[in-house]
Image (cartoon, rainbow, N blue to C red; front, side, top):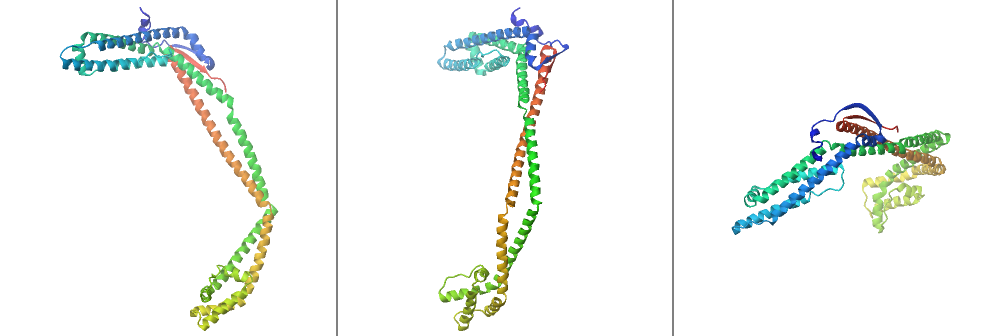
Length: 423
């Protein structure tokens, strides 16, 4: 019996079950497999490498017979022979190119060997797909070569099928070793990262420090805004706002009356060839700036020129001039006095408020609280990310452990429990 037949009798037999539980540490899992099944692994490697060599030899033989077909020529009717040889050459070129792609792989790991067997099997299946015309020409004009090709391909197909079948049965012990080595290395890497980083604890410590700083700043802010000085400043601001509102109302009410002079003023400017515009805030322009005499002259000039016919004013405008004249004489002095008092008081109060460092202190505390809040958001995000990462690692470790133990049971029949180290 040749070496390729050693495992055939066991091809469809499940692994004999061993219900004795073997508990092995994660670090020693791969070594345990070599210790328990090292001889079997070496035997499988020797077998599959022999199968690979035999398969490659069959592929080389198939390539050689295709090249021999390429050297053959059909002699006959010129038209028939031209078509026949051209079809034959096309088939040879295609077939040799496909076989060349089934090159011998480097390395002897399970995945590489399995890939080579699959590629060879699929490639040979493609080689068998010839058109009816090609099949007819080969069988009728190149019978001997066709039989050699069929025999070589059948041999290669059997070798590919045999190698693939072995890898899917007894050869899985090689896959088990690779998977177990990869899985344990990955699990150890994940566990070592969790053990080394200690990031979660560091993040939580920083968040605790920030929360403490936040409470201190909030206490400072509360003490500031509840103090006597802050209350006095708030009252001053309220008073200032009321005064400024009253000043604005004085100006608005007065301007409503003074603006009745706008059209007469424009008429006077046109008469005199002037280009001055009526002020937007006549109360400030004429009254607050102590220019009541100028205002009175404008009213007087408007009345006189209207009477002389130099400018034309509507009856209502003439009536408004008289009303405005009385308003300026009777109401404006009191408004001016009140306006001046409020304005001067507001300026003094503004200077006093500006000199206070309380708003600056409040702004500084609020900015610090904002900064702490942003930093806490960053830390929360980092913590969530780390927790998710840890959970993913734990889930991956659990799944790798389950798969490793299951694969050992399936391939060897042995019950293995991989013991994880404490983090």
